[in-house]
Structure formats: C-alpha cells, structure tokens
Amino acid sequence: MSFVAYIKTCPAGNDPAGDFVRDARDDRDLPDAATWRQLELYLSKRGMMDRAIAAGKRVWVAYEASLGKVGVSA
Image 1 (cartoon, rainbow, N blue to C red):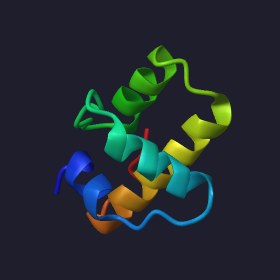
Image 2: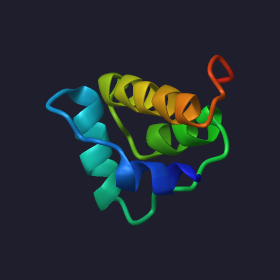
Image 3: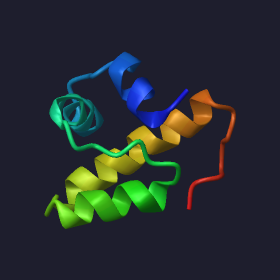
Image 4: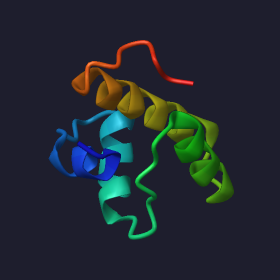
C-alpha cells in the first residue's frame, strides 16, 4: 500500500496526527513518498510547523507498522 493510499484509509482522530491526516487528504500535491525523509522535506518546503512535522512522523511510523516495517524510518 502506498503512503497516499494509507492516508485515505487511516482514521483521523482528535489529535495532532488526526489533524495531519485530514490536512494530507486535502493536499492535492502530497507526494507518494517512499521514505520519511522525502515526506519530511516536502512538509518543510511547505512551511509546516515543527509540531505538524512531528505529527506527520507519527503517521509515517503507523504507516510503516501497517506494512510490517517497524523501526525502518529514517
């Protein structure tokens, strides 16, 4: 499953990670990143605040866990 596909299906709770998911669903330019670093660079270039990037990291870790890639983020 790609990251963008994951974003479309993962729950968006009432927390910063949920906010990230909702924003990501609305972002037509969101890349289908293959690594956390690719996504992090995109978020930085978009001028996202540190807490939004941290929330994105939590979503990325959950994405990798859904793929069985626990502990692979870099």
